Amino acid sequence: MEMAKSIIEDPISYKICIVCEAIVDRECDCCPACSAYKFNSNSEDVVNRAIDIAAKPQTAIAHQSIYKD
Image 1 (cartoon, rainbow, N blue to C red):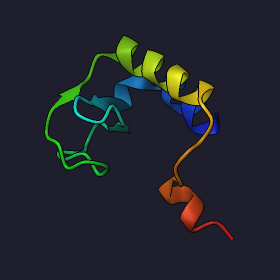
Image 2 (cartoon, one colour):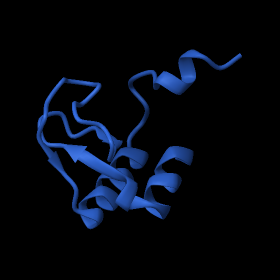
Image 3 (cartoon, rainbow, N blue to C red):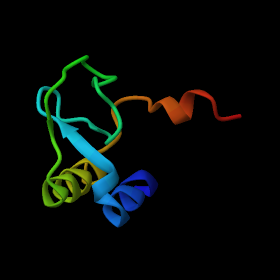
Image 4 (cartoon, rainbow, N blue to C red):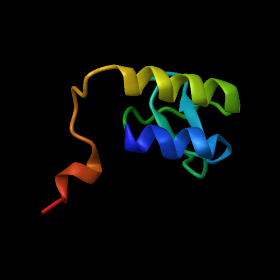
């Protein structure tokens, strides 16, 4: 939910992978989840995807969670 808030507050800094629908940093050239190179940069779509993801239970470990003490 915390990550979704930051994405919703600044959607221009993110984009959606067309292949796996992951939200990635706008500066990424390649999706870190699936290695795809096609992205949707529409801010409204990014916000809607962040809301969708936040509404679902977490089923994967985020890279931030791996390094938490």
